[in-house]
Length: 536
Image 1 (cartoon, rainbow, N blue to C red):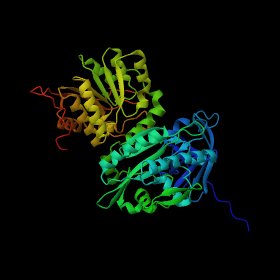
Image 2: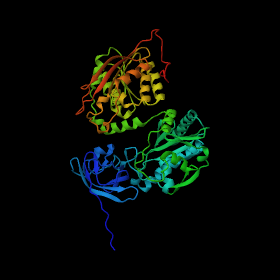
Image 3: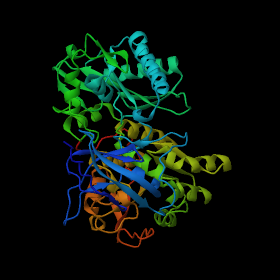
Image 4: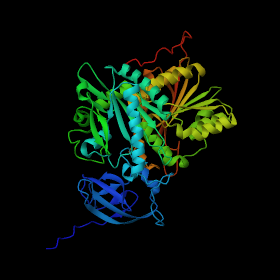
């Protein structure tokens, strides 16, 4: 008796994504030329069309040429749709290869990297040797219980393997302390030990999250993440950045051994406690489209440990993909500010690629640029150093209160009555981060001065956007900005609202420009010690 061949739907493609008769709401793998490139949940059809599988933003610039595409159910591996697509010029093949010649794919953070599915056994073994080196330093030198965590633990518990669409190993350690501040202090001690013993580049994402960047056998870099975990006297167990659950040290200690890629690794005593807290009650069901959602626990932890890397990651990706599209000449806003300056120095908050900072410097006016993405301004910083122009740049995470107070104190001593400017910044910030902006302004303008801001207003939401990722972007009303500035002592001296301020290709946004003044203290005193808003 012969079986009936399963029906496979055709695929068509356009700039929005792939269209195929596949079940919406189910995790799907998309393969190009037989290799998984991204996972997605199809958007339900509208107006009688097939469901849409939208292109990830990081993939768009590679979509030029032809490719055989296949859509599979992640749960069953069954092929649901197949076909050849043609994008852009339609010439040649769509190739997803990085600068090291490695195949890359989209991982859960929306970036392109070489996933574990695509590395050979030798490279995987060498990387896991580095992981074991870190675990040994944590356990022996730092004397903390260290274990595999998050996605790495999830893969080990499910099937003893690294998750194929993952790109790095997650480690955790249980702090000796029960309070966030002591756990953070301990984390800095651990960071120093890791730097001394490994010699690797290490980045601190926040007070409880370290990223280590060892070189791999092929010359590339693959990170190892280390997260702080601590239990409280109130019977709660937390792990940076996402875990908060009922529990105590017994969920972690004594550590157990669990198999991962043929070797035994330390794991929590009860892995299910951390895994359910991180991934929910269905954590045993694989889902390559899983993303962490904002929740009270995440907010509580980020208030404790600072850092707040969400916007940094988003903007890092933007500048990596679009830096060559962003103008290098002064912005219209920067020119408008320059027309109103006397002899003040300028501090550009959210300076982007530094084009306005360099314009001020070329005119002989000292200027500093602050931005969360140092890669955005690195070219201009090199140029300023080479030509000895009065332009400086500093990496600065406005979402971190620690960063805000530290940078504000430094610059308040260096810059006497500077002008603060922020172009197209405020509308993209959440309320706590805007509070930090106003704190910074008050610290820098404690002797009096002006702040120039430009931001998108609600009328801009439905207007065309040049960059696709900006669709549906946030906006903010001038009334909210005026009220927030007033809380920190700022008074609006000038307001302009309209289009025509910053046309860019086919986009002409609806913007508001404000000049906000901080009056000079009546007694001539110094108000820098006041670092909190009146409602804090």
